[in-house]
Length: 201
Image (tube, rainbow, N blue to C red; front, side, top):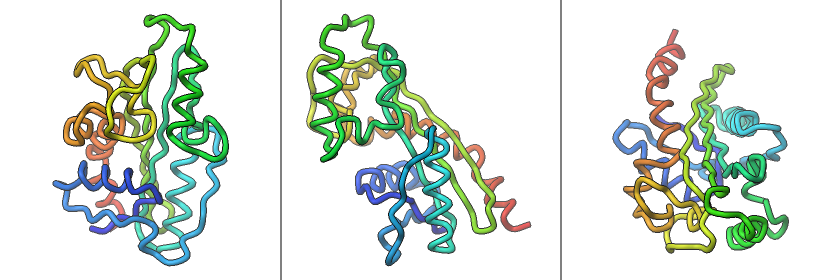
């Protein structure tokens, strides 16, 4: 079955394809469809943003669409950067600028104050309006400097305690087994067969 992934981020497309490789789902990026509209992520929560993206792409393509909205929530920053993770440091948006601002804002914090979590919300929307939402979390802490060269986003400063490494120090297979996105996909897998079956009735 073909599902359109509502993102222009090639890193996300690759992660979803890797994680869902065994499920018999063909993940198509939205840019495979001409003139797919730009989507303003103006929701007040990860779920609102994910649903909006999935609904817009579903309406444009006529296909089942899936979108995720995810970000980093730092305990001592009251959940920031949260839904603003990708544009935390403003324009021009870049991972390097976002990380630099985060580390600056946390420069005086001790290790016990550096708890954080990645959150991912995945929404699936079908033509006709039926929807499915799943969520995943991964706890960790923020390092004082970037470590590792893999991944993207805040991966170089997100230390995963059980593995003893940052996400950027893990290879893609390791990360895809433990990440917030992997947790959300596992939750989605529990619900997706019933959801797809309901579309046939």
